[in-house]
View 1 (cartoon, rainbow, N blue to C red):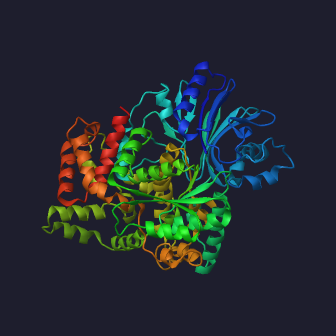
View 2 (view 1 turned 60 degrees about the horizontal axis):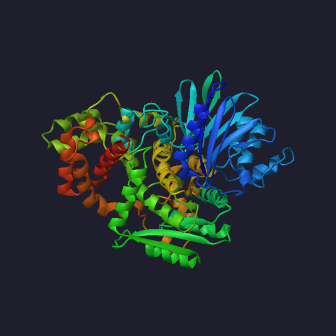
View 3 (view 1 turned 45 degrees about the vertical axis):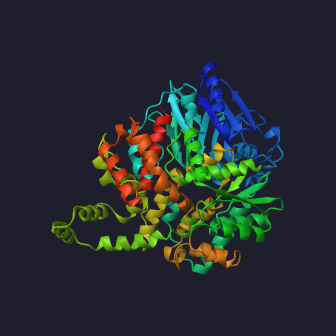
Length: 616
């Protein structure tokens, strides 16, 4: 796990570009504190900072060249099946490293060209320079587990794992992207290729860019919609057996490391399966990490996590946090996070767990992201019912209802319910279009719902569960790629920790995407995952109700957040007031003080404002 940087100029590389890449490397050194390097010729400069996980020797440092020096590469991530690919290549290529996955990428490219991407299982961003062909490939993994930013200045393309490298080096001046801020207010993120800065783009998940002297071409090499548009006619038992086989393989791959592994153990189903399979795959010392509040509540799963850790005979590292601990994590993370606003306050908890892992000598942390998308969220049943209702309500009936003298608040709710398809409601994490149009002070032509509709329209198969297939396409391409995965990557890498998500294995996801929902959710949410876990985990885990990671946040959102909001937004000349009407900010603050129900929305606004201040 590492950070990568570079400049691509084709006969136009200057000494200043080499200096920029040195400065880029310095700005992302937390992503790779173990080694740093730069390589250049007249066409490119490649930079790399390394967090050593696989093949810890110096011979695996980057930038790396092929034996004939015709290929140069910088790579961030892990190719978990690198040993299998090496077996395919070993008779044709001489390897100078013992088991570096970076060198496997080089020789796989020499063997199969860019189609080698289809062979890779893992998370990655890759910059590969083919000197013979005079072309550079920039690649982002299928799901977008690792961030990858690009910008162009004076015909030279620059790239980095974090966009702050462009600004801290003096290459670019910061200009906020108003449209991205508008979408953030609904999604808590912005879809690629947009970023929060006008002059920076993000390489999209599942794409690679091919760059030559003649320009840049964008190619899609993987798309979850291709699988959602297929229907598998298997039985539940067949689906369970195949899913279990793929999950077992995914877990085995995520345990490939030359350093010890820790597990973020909430006590829930997904993280407990991470522990079960890690115990099956590794003989070295394994540790679990759990955080809980000092004040116990019905959301506290720490006793379950401790009990299961002891049963598995692994080291259990608990951390009971006070409100002050949590606030300290938030303030510390907000002060160092400048690439993107911290839309989800859970990010601070991920940062805290990562710091604990690092303080205990770990570099790798297993997390449970992706399990709910494999098994289905409880809310999906409600969305299906809402969709059915809305389909069969005639327009004349809606018009009639709206003519009845009802309180304005009720009419607003009816309008909100009917203004867009049911699936949009799944992705309104902040504010609806109706709300934004009233408080937004800038360009009113933006529309966040169009993004959801565009993604949902990629599902063209006419199946009885097409509605949920549309929802899942948006989950993977918007919520996971641009919100949940950055929520894992940024805080973990800020603590120099590599976070791995076994449930995000592409083969497992591809298969799961084809399954009919009456199979996948046969007995409700996560039916298949529970069936797999039944003979592996104790009943007290399998049959426990789902508890969200963020339940720890409730006291903060109810009591602390309004104080911060008033101090930093209402009582100051805050930058967010350039975008949002003051009256709305004051109203939502007052409404929260009365009901204590608007803490999450206060946070979305507060973290956006804090990000603007930090980038000022």
